[in-house]
Image (cartoon, rainbow, N blue to C red; front, side, top):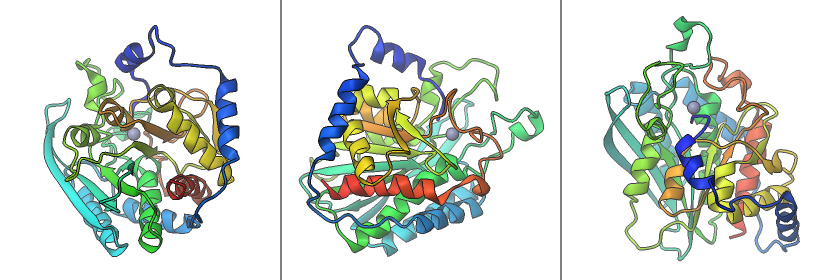
Length: 333
Ligand SMILES: [Zn+2]
């Protein structure tokens, strides 16, 4: 993902009443806290999620079109099937990147309860960035990153959700969406020629999915959650500004679920930054979608788009906190 969405912020936030006081947000979370648990929520296994992160990293950088990307995808599809997803489909297409390359991209979607009257979508990107924008040394800046956090962490949480849903079916339909081509976008650190509509050079897989939703029935997801950089040591998650603009009720609902899951220390009920990520195309397609993404003062984790985004900087406790919050969300629908 990239840091800011200038065009989207301008159109979304300019002159509208998107923001309201932090008091009303706190009240909303407090009210949701009082809800009685109607179903049992399974226990999310952080070590299982971590093992899925490690397996992805072991393939090498999962740059679009690479062997590692393909091998990782085959592994993920195989795991979804082994975990008992009702359907597992792949969506293959080509996209032209900002540098003129034609990228062969493949999205993966595993579905549970395909005939349910209500469904939700949980998404992450499984591709990794071909560059390390934030390395000072040009030699290492143009080498691909491991993407243990930026890519593999969200997928790791989703794979553990797949295992749990295979054992205990939720009452709603759930689509686990792994998109390709999220992190191939333009940045000035890797190319100092400006690119037209540079925001749109990111999130190629989710853009395609949002325009070509592979559903047989008329039932579309009522809402979505994107997981990105959810495995960093001591990571905290704030209310991403565009999520609050497009999907404020869902942010409230997820933050309340996180509180019930005992993860209030991780899910900080304060605004973070605004991010260009896979939630944007879903929101633009009419699916209110929240981006769960690490936020620190000044931006993302210091490992972001560097070669320090590796397995050594993944903390199972972070994966566990996020995973348990999402379980609490899914199993209370
Ligand atoms: Zn990234």
